[in-house]
Image (cartoon, rainbow, N blue to C red; front, top):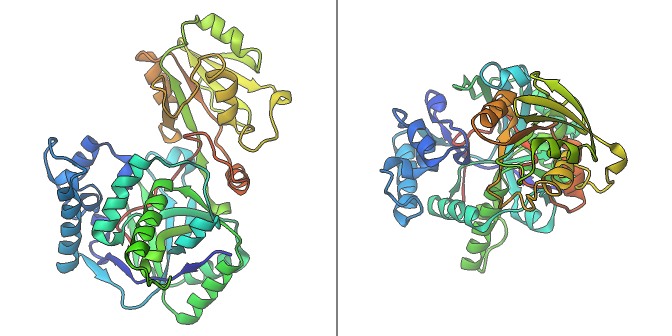
Length: 420
């Protein structure tokens, strides 16, 4: 069963929320983060990426950087930018795509998650299930950030198989007045409700105890970092009871039926020394191929791929008799890797190879054309991995290839903070 509980949130004052809420720290390069906070002193990105307060020569992983993040958070709490709720509560967080870059792909899409604290022990014992590996060097930054602030500032994006009781309770609570209602610069409407009634909190916790597993959709490194800080604090406090706040991590839990995964496209820098003609001949063994000319191929089903090569789009359809039943090998991202990128182009490890790049589906086929026209060898448009596939891989205790899923809209940081 999933152990999920309410918490006392540190959150923006209602008149400041639109200035505070920020995209996750890891969607920006250092240069992009610096530009994003210009003229925005209340943006939470200032706290999430404290090196933005300094010049390019500043060591973003220095002790001073994390001390700066803590100082900034304390200043915002002292000056009234952030408030602290007096008692534990659940929160509902709704995101709706109204305009912007996502609109052509998913205008009107809406998803509502429950903001809560999930158990660190659930992560350790497999109730919180993963589908990606994490890298130690990426964890270290967030470990130090969480530890320095004594707070979790970016929620982990979790999914669960839809539960009738939770869905009905969520719909009922959303009839009330929201705490926040604003549209961010990227055209996403954000609404947040507070669920503070003790009886309703008890019902919600009880419903979660009926759910056998939750799944990390996005935020594997943030989750791993939060857990490692918890283990560190347990070691520092050998008499811990398990009820301390550091035993729980900030999460937003969404029913799987409301989530939409976008494709994660691939671009390769070379064809491993073979000609485009020979590459197409090699591809013809595992795929049926059609030349679609200059018309972009947006895959319309599992097993369909677009290939942009020398100014032409090709539609590739995988020969289904070759597909494996294994939940990982059967993924389209695995099919492309195993039958073309690895076998033909010799990109054996896409995690480490500098010959492959990954392009989020939000950028569309025009970005693929641009990259190839500017010098890359070929690009592949993908059909998105489904939620059912993600859950099946996680339930089997397996891991997906890198860059298998792209979730949108992204959760905002700084909306609700969990102090540990």
